[in-house]
Amino acid sequence: MSVAQNIEIVRERIDRAALKIGRDPAEIKLVAVVKNVPLEKIFEAIDAGITDIGENRVQEAAGRYQLISEKYPKITRHMIGHLQRNKVRQALDMFDIIQSVDSRRLAAEIERKAKEKGQDQAKVLIEVNMSGDSSKFGVRSSETIELFRFVSTLEKIKVLGLMTIGPLAGDPRPAFAALRKLSDEIKQMNLPKVEMKYLSMGMSGDFETAIVEGSNLLRLGRAIFGA
Image 1 (cartoon, rainbow, N blue to C red):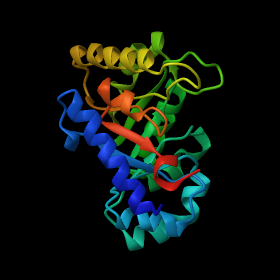
Image 2: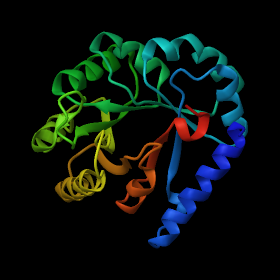
Image 3: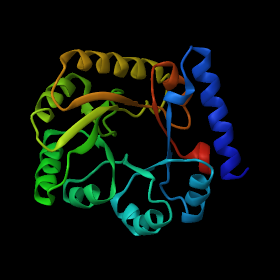
Image 4: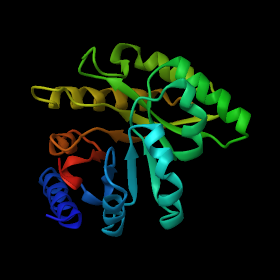
């Protein structure tokens, strides 16, 4: 199967899952995860209609940033992997949205670097470890609201929602449902510089379940590019 055929199949699955529960498929954004994907395959995906790409590593993204940007200047870039504080300046240069903010220290560093650069507000999502898996990054669900309160005081950050990674084993739906509930709770707080626009959850193995629980930002790699 070609990349274009895989994307067509994925979009059909998104449509079915959304329509089954009365959602509009058009409100669900597909982010193609390009970790370890050759450049020509990324170009194939963009030519097939992909408008958003997700990178896991700043260093890998930096190696091909210019090539992709010159050919496809309107692509939206998402940082979806763990972001080290010493890579924040590079990340701000390359990414439109940082989906993996998970601590006060990282948020404060983004604020500091954005001020140094004279940059407009950095758009971020707060990554939450809903599964409680110690091997995963993300703020604990019980500490998420406290982190939101802190980030909402920062001048150079705008929060656009929440992100999580489903559990490695078992049913992901409880974790996704809990994130949606948390998102609704934060919306009611009406914090400054917080716009709960996105619920980023669902990967190649569980995105249909994520759609049922309200995800509108799917991060798919294997389903698009193969193993």
